[in-house]
Image (cartoon, helix red, strand yellow):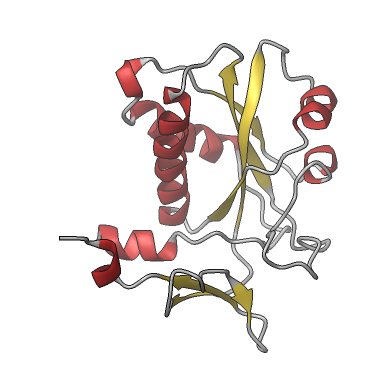
Length: 187
């Protein structure tokens, strides 16, 4: 059921680094993005695939801004693969719609395959672009870290709009407050 798939699709930040994600799987996930809607059918997104842990990319990412005392996954917990979403430098505002649609398709496909992922917009774009040799005509929009999840993520009801920061409990489970449905529908 789609709702169950969406509930399983969380932002995982710890992975079993020893379990690889193949380039074939990454390609299948990109095919889901390719088949998804695109604003004005422009289809401007391009993808850079890394089917292994990559220290150059990892060092250019910022993880979990709400968790101030956590620097990101430790060795053994790092992503096994990444997908970088790229766009031509002269992109229109529609690229952000396409990026959201593509990410949702990719992450739902990953979840269906027993993988987890995390979208990361805090990317040191110049460092990553140069170290990976990404052509200059493309801009990095965001990164998706992928792998077999190695943490528990729990959805909680948020008690207010001011209390939506995710956190880790005493058992080191990742807690994600979500606003109640009745507060989202205005009429």
